[in-house]
Image (cartoon, rainbow, N blue to C red):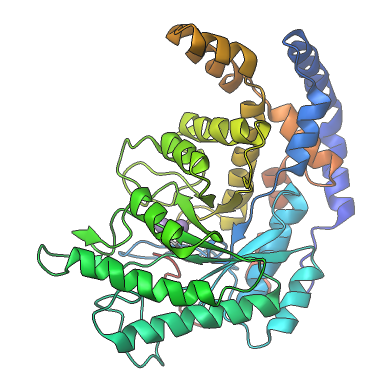
Length: 430
Ligand code: RM4
Ligand code: MN
Ligand code: MN
């Protein structure tokens, strides 16, 4: 089955839009030059920016109330890869895939790997799942996994993670991400210190088996499914754990995993300073782990996070190579469209952060001029860099307007014909 959004289709769609893009691009270039910024350099940065897409993000998401499947949604990991390839073709930003095991466990890793590579894709991070039970599973994770009171359950959870490392090695992955839902729903249910000790013991085993050249990411989350006390609830606990584990363990920040109003950019700065920022699961949220599209609710927050990241990049902080991944659930949109728009939101925040006049900002900080410091950031944030993003995509062979080109291609309608839903698929994401 060929799902190619072919080069001619993209090129002919781009041709319609190129004259206006060039006009906007030239104008923006002149405006930026007045501020001493080089649009060609910024376009190069936009072209080089990379973020991975989640295999679990291309299927329709759901809430715990319902799931409303989109027509033509992928029914297996190969069809998921096809959708990831469509996203890559149009955006040219997302060659990496984060894979969820067992949701996407391949029968033949070698076959899956070449299927992905033929489409210019690779696997970057493996994600284990010990937050739900599988049909063939011996012991239940109802009361936890890596931190469970029963050593048998802990062993089973560790074994599952070791399987992810083996699979990942065959798939060419370079990192492993561990998020556990372990915790308690009631005061007194869990001995907080003992649970963390047990978690760490399990993680030490996983860390010891980490293939060479790999990184281990610890993902914290404030609550849900545990509603009273979560074992790895915050960045402090995460930082403690990765310190204990060793130099190849890092903290992963999922934007939706914090209390409302928490200053996430400050957490990012702290983890950079402590040498333990591993990467991100980007998404956006209004209330909790909403998994909404990146930049849809709090674009200024996203910009401020990238402001910290770009500051560290320019300062060449040693060991600073964060992995950028999207982790979203698409309940009411076409996941391919959402992921394309979201990846562009990351590039936008990244380019805007590069527009910050850091010399001037430092002067205002030294001089305690709060108003001008904020204005310096706002000047960058207010700049409409869309022509830079569109030109970068165009130069890389992608689409000037990815969503419009995707819709005009008829991809979804063809997918609906070629992928008739045979089984009622589960939510696939929590
Ligand atoms: C969790 C967490 C994990 C993701 C699962 C599906 O809340 O964000 O990263 O793998 O959801
Ligand atoms: Mn996540
Ligand atoms: Mn989450």
